Length: 422
Ligand code: SAJ
Image (tube, rainbow, N blue to C red):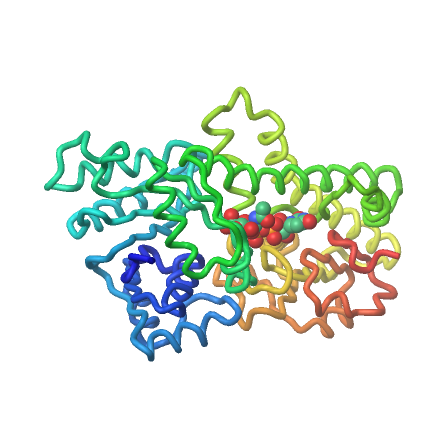
């Protein structure tokens, strides 16, 4: 029998809100907590403040039925899930755990014997142990050693989220979960909680392995993409079509190379490997190099745009300031509207610094340019206008609209996604 009648989710963002909604859809009473008043008010109106397919109807249904509510202040619950950001501290790559610490302080006054506290945020190794200490320190009713071991009065586990933005509602149900308890009892209780809606396996380990597992998954992808990006630069030099090359190599039953692009963006793959590098700098050599390779790809792309501009100058006799450049795609990956940590956005901004008033952006998934791009006189234009009127086309993201284009004759093209390659 499941004892989790009430679940509280701390942090109602891209992971917390869908997870809260999942529990609410499966008969659990859910209290969502967030420091953002706008988010709380929006959710309580049955609406959402983020973009994720199928989430809006699910939230609307749960709020209307009274199974999900949002609040600024934590309340008592049987289980608490912490899904807050873990960004970097300042400009170095040290993880900032202050949001986790703040969440611990916020829930400590309402914690009761038998409660379960799960950290879902992607975290460096050791963060769950730190969380246990922060919870203990913040609980006035508890002397320090009582929070540890099988006799602890609350259970603590790390269960990292691993869903793909854009497919969260499906992956939350289908994906296997790694459940890393501080003790075996903690793991068992946490696995039982997820089994309320997870159809995948809930696999039990310890908290440090669970932390490292999440970082390993994203580092694996980062290293693989870095390999593809390095290949793309080598192939460009050797006059080989890298997309054909990768598709041929992937015909081997034990080869699976990912795709090159204009760089790696988002808040996960470009961030999480640094948590390993920061912890063991002298040991994490491949992981570190992959980060540097992927982070340097935008500069290489800008170099290719400069080459294309020179080519247009030579073939048309135009003045450099008359050359128009269209950047296709600003999002951090295809068919989403999320521009955060996007290499495409950074490339577009840098090109606008070098070619003022000459940069046009095409991004079918947004209606308005972010303030800082508009301030650089970049114009958001429809795809057709770009194809008709500019001299250089730079494909930065493989949005489905761009893949449907069948004629780019007469344009200089820098295609970082190989969508128009033969
Ligand atoms: N990218 C490439 N080439 C590829 C695939 C991706 O250049 O072949 C680029 C994308 O364009 C994007 C970046 O990598 O800029 C990251 O995109 P992604 O689709 O690989 O991953 P995210 O960041 O949206 O989500 C990842 C997922 N992790 C893995 O697939 C191992 C997701 O399951 C995690 O839950 C998520 O990180 C997270 O929250 O950590």
